[in-house]
Length: 318
Image (cartoon, rainbow, N blue to C red):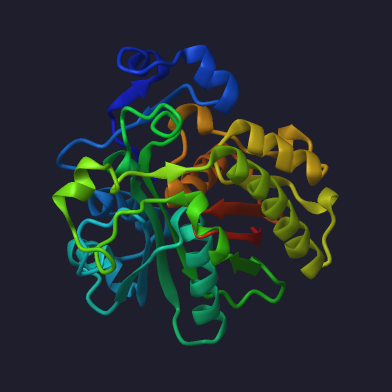
């Protein structure tokens, strides 16, 4: 994982917004977030997280067959941010491309990598979730800018020949484009072109229908989690750890309640980073592993919802 060293607390936001630490903390669970420096971007943060992942895996970048960068805040319109990552890592034989499933990006990326590996096509795939959400925030809108932060997380999926099922047991992903207006940056490029009027109207900033998103997030995340467990013949008791998307503490608690998962089995770090979009789950997963919450043989459930709307779950056996 990688997060910028620039910490912005709720008290910092109080200085320029009609809000308070108490208001933000009680409604979202967020205490602080990290904001990228001017010289940081989706690629630079993704590269830093990837270098850590390669080191942890004991691998060289030249062994990678594919790099999937999951981001909704790419460095440029084209080429793909993944190509910049590939260049800096020196992963010369890897196919490199981006996917845009917003907060669900990392789970979608894992699902894609899972299919390539299980089909026998590739051996080693790097999946990165990286976002500079601060670049698409309206910093005068207290309903959105207090929620998000910047960061990156990365994981390497590798073929194993172990006799018992392990690693990703299954992934389950869905979309509903009829609800695309709930979370959207409306300013277009291919659709409307880039305009100064669009900038003035803040069309290139995030717009969100908070209450509607809350309700659908709880329903969809709990539904797809139950589906993933049932697909693998697992019960709630079989899951040692739930790693949910870190969007809102109340959403996390509501999903846990619907899954009948005790909160001590649910990993939470939203208080430190806010919503880091596609980086949310890999950052949380890294911290959970570092803290010893994923011992060999244990089962972890990942679950997420993002703009699109998109949602999904992944079941992992370590």
